[in-house]
Image (tube, rainbow, N blue to C red; front, side, top):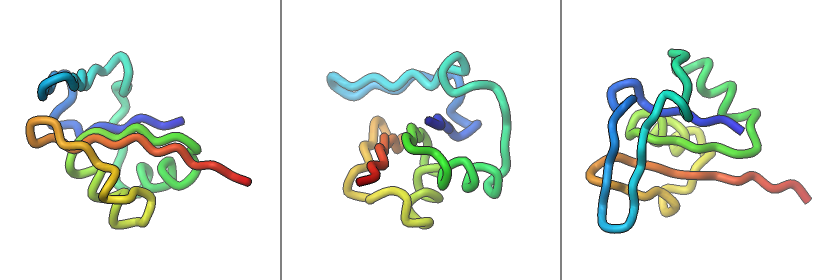
Length: 86
């Protein structure tokens, strides 16, 4: 499992009706990584939790996320992906 958030939104909370996304360093961690390193993690993890337009758009571009699965909470993109093997 990997959870990645854009650094610009770290520490912020976003709400829209019944949905609250708390972009907490306690959950997402404090480590800053570049796009290449993020892509390695995204491709190798079975579960992706991504918050922020930059990281979600990167995952869509790489074919790892279906754009129809993306939630937008007050302008902030969020998606959870579970990869299954048969």
